[in-house]
Length: 117
Image (tube, rainbow, N blue to C red; front, side, top):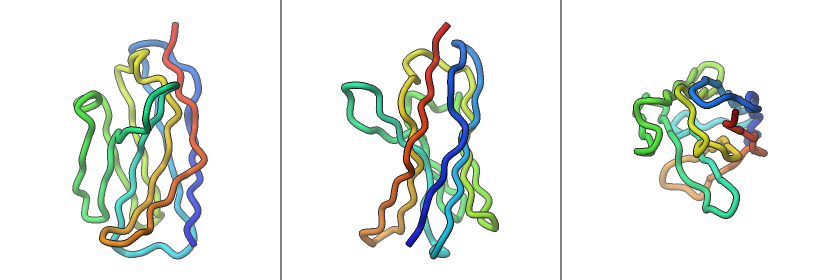
C-alpha cells in the first residue's frame, strides 16, 4: 500500500506564491504518475498538474505558465510551485498517485490553499 503525506498550504495574498509538497511511502511502483488536483467549494475535483516518472507533464489551462511541477524519483516526492496566485486558485489541493493501466489511484488527505487579501 502507498501512503501520501502533503505539506504546504495556507493563506496567501493575490499575486503571491506558495509551494506544496507530497511524499509517497510504501510499495512505490517504478512507473507511476504523481500530481495535484484541487476542489473548490461546490465544484468538482479538477486536475491541476501531473508528472510521470519519466518527467512528462500536464497542466490545466488555468494554471499553465503560473504553476510548475517537479518530482524527485529517488525520494518519491512531488512538488507544486504556485506563482501569481489568484483568488480563483482557492481550493483544497490533493496529492495523487496512480499507476497507469491499473486501478491504483490514491489520494492524500488534502491541504487548503486560500488566496485572499
